[in-house]
Length: 158
Image 1 (tube, rainbow, N blue to C red):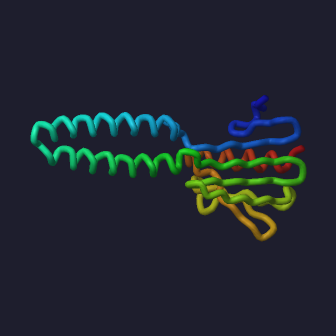
Image 2 (cartoon, one colour; image 1 turned 90 degrees about the vertical axis):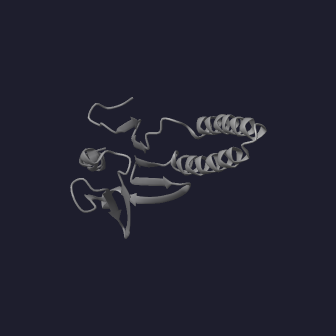
Image 3 (cartoon, rainbow, N blue to C red; image 1 turned 180 degrees about the vertical axis):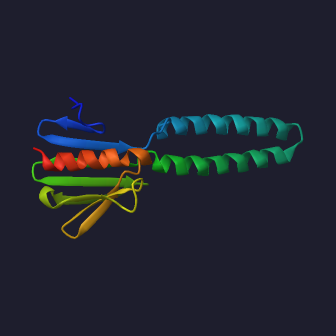
């Protein structure tokens, strides 16, 4: 159940969770099927023209599907990127995933500092006990201060 005082967080019992994800309209599986369909269509057209005597069309079709495949691979690699922030009991756990690489930081709640990295619309830096991690990549810049206020309020309460 979501508390109306939080715009980004969800409460589940005594814990508060923030799930910040990239807004992807196509999943990697859907992208794979789209790519296979595109490959079949392009190769079909290339083979048709190759049979008509235009042999270079098939070579360019192969080049096209290779380049589109590289672009789709770059997109799919970042489709699952996200940030997960969890406040439960005396600890704040932050996990950030980018291109399959996961970074994790755990803080004692009483020592966490929440501040913008450089300006009001910059990423939010969570720091404490000699560690720091940046969050807010998947929140519009003008809403990052709202997220920072939510995290501060959650750290003070409960």
